[in-house]
Length: 475
Image (cartoon, rainbow, N blue to C red; front, side, top):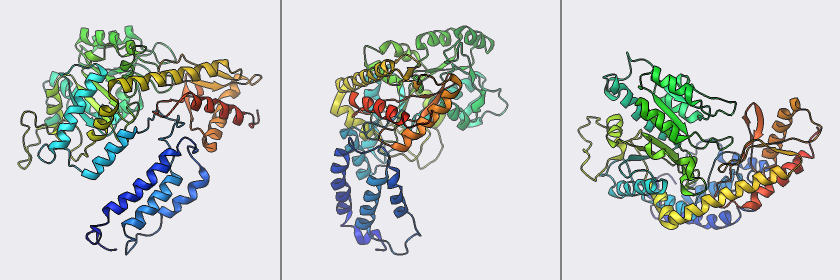
């Protein structure tokens, strides 16, 4: 084959190969190892020189599906706990296939009223789900990092305006560094967003009162007074090592008293609002100036999916719109051009999988899933506490369980090295995927069960495999 025009009648056949493979692959996720290093040899089949004459779409897709289903890290299965990663609900996966099928240019109403209307609807549904005011503006993004870029770009626009400068048109030259304050729970994606925005990732100042990173409110209060209120406060709802959260309401009080901008990182923790058991953690989010979250975490939609909400919708337009290109249409009432409300110009219709999953399962379905994961995490915490050779290092607050292997007779100074070796063995084994991190100066495990397929049996398997592998290590 040399031209896709020669294959105009084969698209359905190529898609059929994927559909035929999907059933057995998805049905087998519960039994597959998360990663099998013996399958890495398959990756060589993706390599080689660029073909002069192609194989044709059926042959190419057959090879891709065969290699992919064999060599992929099966992170959409129930035992991928290494990072805070969800899966894809059946409805969300079908919605994503629909997005690829329709291949909409989702940036402008003119190019896709379908995509624009779907994004408007899902942003409203998400605000209802999280208890955010309906008046907030919003936009879908590829990730929480780009959601941070969106929210913090609005904060930058607001901050520069307080200095009499339009940052979108004039930049930051001549202005002092924008003060950004947070606790020790701040995530690297916030720093990356500041780096992208030209504010500098290391300009963020941390105010922590202990080695867990909990916020020092008094010190932050003093710093805000020194800045005269022209500052950005970053509150963190759900930290990746222990699931800890800042006191959002108290930080909202501080920001309001000083006239600062409050940005909330709710990448996965925003979903705490769905359960009466954890809703207190999210109380005060509705008072923020900008809020971000991830869809490919606890919402369980495919990569890439994030969302950013901003209290004053006009700031989104100020930060990302008004390009002055004659060929681009102006926004007209409900005909929203979402590429003028966020960092992307070319955008796929990422609202469709979100629409499909929220329509399919509704508020009750997502509340049930969140509460099931809270139960699963609590169960894992109880298993760790009951095990004589495991040590729970933080209370289980959300969907992250922080612990380490601590067998009798091993001195403290050797525990980090031992847990690092055990983490490598666990990832190499592949039956359950959960690597290590650093928390309060210790090497720890911090599995995060939030895949819709995950049950208590899966975290029980994690403990079994960990202890089995630990028994093979030279202590």
